[in-house]
Amino acid sequence: MLAKGTKAPYFEGVDENGNVVKLTDFSGKKLVLYFYPKDSTPGCTAEACDLRDNYERFLALGYNVLGVSRDSSASHQRFIAKYNLPFHLIADTDLSILKAYEAWGEKKMYGKVTEGTLRTTYVIDEEGVIIDAIGKVDTKNHTAQII
Image (tube, rainbow, N blue to C red; front, side, top):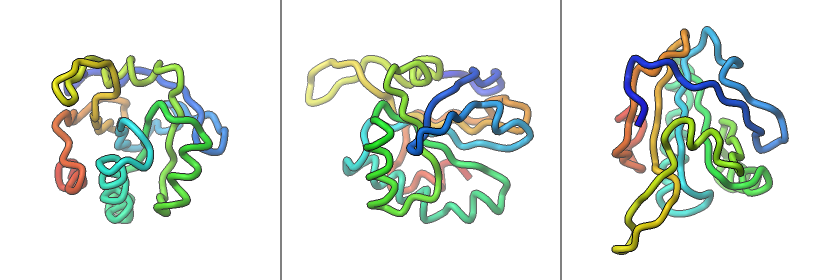
């Protein structure tokens, strides 16, 4: 994981609508940037819905929320529509953002070692500095971990 106090790596990706989203779009704003493995799976859905249910709270505190996974824009559109998510999701199909944020790597699943998305959240301040890094995400209570 990237360390607190380090500059957030620049990223540029495409959201569910095909729009380019860049780190610099959030200059002067706080950002919750969360990385998750796959749209519409139980843990990822619980995490997204917890962030959705607390979205107004994030906005009131001056935070934007942005999710990133390797799913396609079309998959993100379905996920957003199905669960009425109020924030954008980036389709990082080439893994460039996941790797830059050290959210891609080895993990064990059912005793087998594979490569995949490491569920990770970074809180980035108005200056583009990581002020919090969460690696052990509680998908059902993720907002409480962030705020």
